[in-house]
Length: 370
Image (cartoon, rainbow, N blue to C red):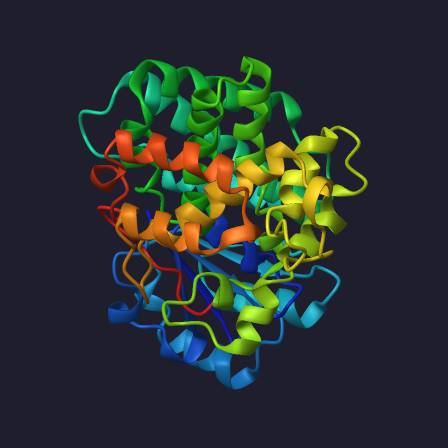
């Protein structure tokens, strides 16, 4: 269900097209390079006219046959007569106002693609886990829209998803959940869903109340909301990040605070898990250098689950660590982490033979140069 994104050079920072890979597998193609081979088996195309040059448009027109057989949406400002004329001159296309709410553009593409979130999930997974995956994914999509548009976070959808995930973990265990979520095309979504499941299992292992277990899951779903403001060229980069790119990634808790500060609909604990999950007990973390008792048990749990997931998940530029090695790395972090809590976490993951369930996704689709 891949979509093809077409622009003349890099996408403008304010283009809504930049956000589409959070919702669909996508590839960016320069107007001058559109052809049958580059479009491949794309199911739909979105053309961004912002900043398009005459040379770029001429090249696109000459290769229009490459995308003429698939639905094409052209984004243009109806206040810009030149863009409207350009869009009309391209050929069969649906022209959408660039200021159209992102939710409407996403909904339009979902209808075109007949989007099925379970299409890539491995066969044979329990029904409860599949339903939980659908609801968790639906909430993450709504969260991305909320972050992009400044709208209220759908807490009812969040709570429903967290309750469904907790129920699936209780009934089916963690392994089917990890098998399901690792099929997601987005590395960011996959990570958040994995952290949510591991956090819920760990909270259960610690004997927390059902309410606190659900809040830990919700915190896992929300914890990386600040990454919605990081360019996907960095976020989904297939190679190792440069120091400059890493410094941008490290700003995501600050971006998360900016997004969440006015959201009165979210609990303080969930906000803390999103903003503080890179804080360390010895004060060496970020963004605020908190230490000791200023870091709550839920944040400590989230930090452990986030680091463990990051160490064991496979990325294009690295293999995931074996579980015992990852636990060893975390133990060597010493006073940075709550070692008493980590000891209980180690018992949980080693008893469950997590080496068998933390493994590479069966199929990964990479976003290219967005």
